[in-house]
Amino acid sequence: MLQKARFHIFNVCRFYVGKRLCHNKPVRDPLFRRIYDSVLTNVLGRQENAFDSTLLRSCYKADQLEPQKWILIYHDFDASRIGFIGSLSFATVIIGLCVATADYLIHGEFTLNTAKVLKDDAEELGIFIIIPITLMIIVVGLLLKLHFMRIFRIYQNLQNSDAYAFVYPGFFQSNRMHMVSRSEIASKPLLYEDVTKVNVIQSGNISIKNRSMIINLEAFRAQPYRSYMLQERNELPDDFDSFTDSTASEVRRRKSSKLPPKIPPPPMF
Image 1 (cartoon, rainbow, N blue to C red):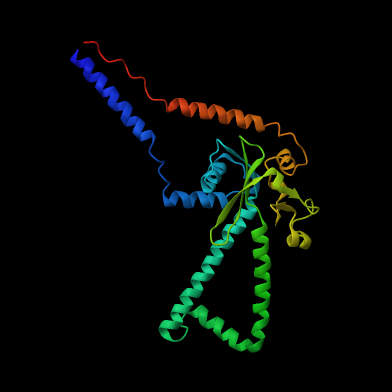
Image 2 (tube, rainbow, N blue to C red):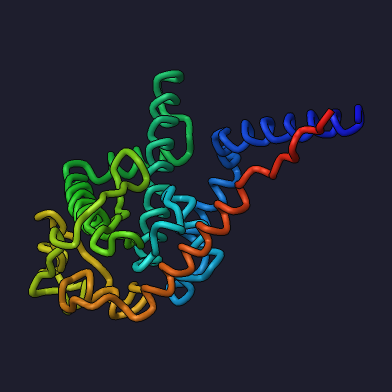
């Protein structure tokens, strides 16, 4: 009888401890893991493998979305790669300028070889130095305009098919996310034009909440997802329900796995 009482107390303690652990917040991934996911999402791979399972997991982690609620329907891998490399290049230039400025303030002159070479070239050009500077500003401005008009990824909500999450470049942060309704998305006459044309770069080929953006038509998971999002058709893609069914079964499986263990009845004394 005493052994049964101890067994019951042990099961009760195990139930409440397990319940407490289930309510704890999930542990955030280590820094190196987040860096690896970011590199995998934006640098490694090719556009043909944009919807690979490993890459998809990294995308969901980087964008902090649940795959049980969202489906990735658009992934412009090339734009993500260019944006990631451009951000690293910009950060490298800023660090270099800071180092050169500190070198000049400490020594009263440039002692770094790169800084001295640039200084000598500027003095040799004289007033004509304004020509390369102006050209550089124009080129950088056009590249930044094109960069901020690109869309990296688009997610579609599995519970509300008219809700979308757009991931696009940010200025002070690497990526930004914006929740958009299907009614707020409109295509432009230049939708099927080459994205490298000047008129597309100027005005974009899609409008999102009256903001001009550029999408790559080849970066969608499938053509029906693009047509539905752009209101060219009102029927959902044929395989959309399969994602919804698999998500529902996964949610049911997770809920069943989190159910507390059955506690045996207390011993009868």
